[in-house]
Length: 239
Image (cartoon, rainbow, N blue to C red; front, side):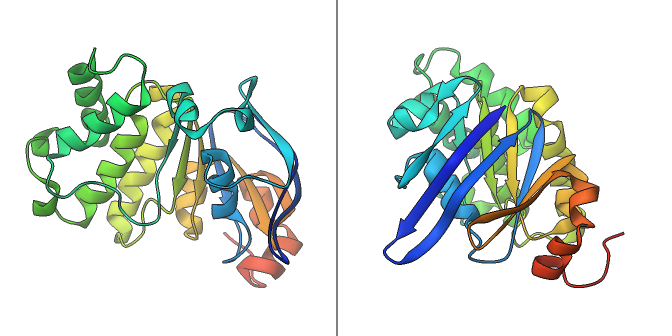
């Protein structure tokens, strides 16, 4: 469980998060909202890239904000970004191995088995020894997820992981994301504008609007909330 209490972030006169208070349950959770709602800022706070003006974040009993960013990685925080982070000149295997080595205390111990398990999980075993520059958009996006699940993560933050993928590949990725809590043992928070992906992956969803929490709860109920539809989804109900 992730407990967020009175989290506020200001950039000059701009309030990006405004006293955000919420509990994310275990499993796969969605975090949605219009552009500029504060979603990426929230991820940046959890990752250690942004220092909040006030507030607390307790993840699985651990005071997350008291740790420097490298200790958060070793504790089990993983993060993907809207833009791909894989190193093109390295192989798929080495890209995932690099994350493993820098996010665990064991260094190279157990590396091969952990990387192979991550690649098998996302279906990239067959391209493990290919360089990233030789791969297409689907494989590149799936590498990001493999880098997030390698080792023993506790909390995985996915920022638009299916960006640029067609519907069929997005659906395939959605099945992988949904299975992360059971297969990997990590809590997932997914940020995405694709409501079909959010519905497919997440039983529970929260909505931000101008840095404030607008709604939270079971995904189907949240997406039918009148305030959510008015602020983000339009006026028609989501099937």
